[in-house]
Length: 167
Image (tube, rainbow, N blue to C red):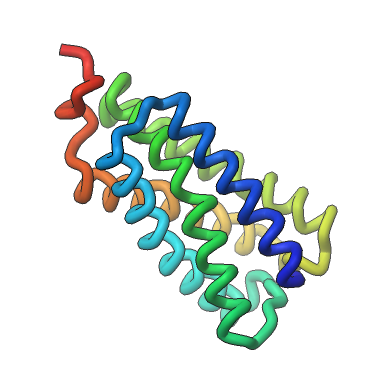
């Protein structure tokens, strides 16, 4: 993966974040919470990538420079933030049960998405054979959404207490 590719997908996710902010009518408090969730999940994802790579589940070629890793981390932050604005809306509308269903759906959809990306761009990520990498990827997605939403809720408060919540 090159620096230019990381910049490109980071900019695409930034555009998505702005669109999701507009469509969800997120307040500045929610936006700050979503970015806080993105930071927490950026750390979580970097640890998961390196940890599961050490266990032989996959390989994500990254330049060993600090600037590349910081850019990659910022890309993870920006890619996660829109998800937490969506989970806030889901939690507000459907409660904890709806959020749990959404997290389960993401854990099921995430691995095929990553395998498709790895097949299309083999220099971005390579999975080891077997079911273990699929399960590790699903658990990473589960943690990605659950942790990020929890941090956003901690920073911004519960969705039911929001000014846009139904009474």
